Image (cartoon, rainbow, N blue to C red; front, side, top):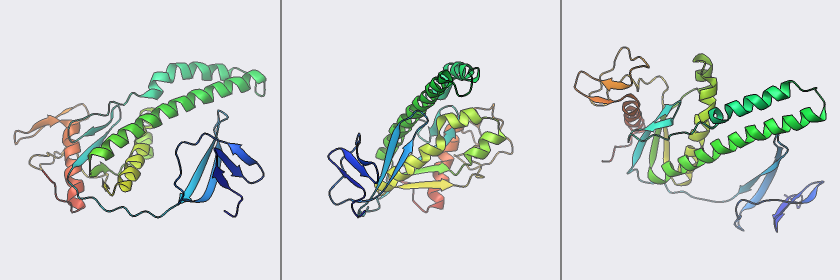
Length: 257
C-alpha cells in the first residue's frame, strides 16, 4: 500500500490520521500482504477497522465421512438430522421489554436536545449488545458444526421474503439464520469441506425420509410425521434427514455410514 497504510506495534497507520492505537484480535503472519482497510463507525460511537490481507493458501478437499442436514427452525435456529437442536436463546425477545421502554423514552424527548442524544446512544448500545450476543452464539454454533461434519446440507431459503410473507419479521431476524449459514460456509471452506444448498421448493417436510412418500398436506400444527409405511418421526428431524439425503444426492456425494 505504498506506505500509506501499515499495521505494527499495536497501531494502525492510516492516511491523514497517522498512527491509531487499536485492539488487535489476532496476530498476522509475516507473509500476509496488507491490501486495504475499511473503517466503520457504529451507532453507539465505536470504530472498527476491517483489514484485508492477501496470502497464498491451498486447501485440499477433504474426503466426506460425516454429513448432516440442518432444517431451519424459527425458535431454535435449526434442527439437525441427528435430532439435535441449537436451542437459540432468542436474545432480541429477551431484551424486547427493556428496548421498548428505552425507545419510548426516546420518542418523547425533544429532537436535537442533549438528553435525546444521550438516550439515542443508550438505545444504540442496547441494539449493539443484542447483535453481539447473537453473533457470538452463531460463531460458536457454526464452529462446532464445521469441526464435526465434512458436509453440511441446508435449504436455500429467502429469509427476507419469508419474514414479509408470514409476518414473522421479528422471529426471523432474531435468530440470524442467513448470518449463520454464511459463517458455516466460510468455515467449511477453510477446512476443505462443503456446504450444500438444496432448492427451497423441495418438499422436505412433506416427504417421508423412510419410504419417500410425499403428503399432499401437512399443517404446521402437526409436529409428528406419521407415514402409512409405519414410520414415525419428529416433523423437523424428518425434514432435516430429507435435506441431508437430497443434498448428498444432488451433489453426487455418497452417504457414508
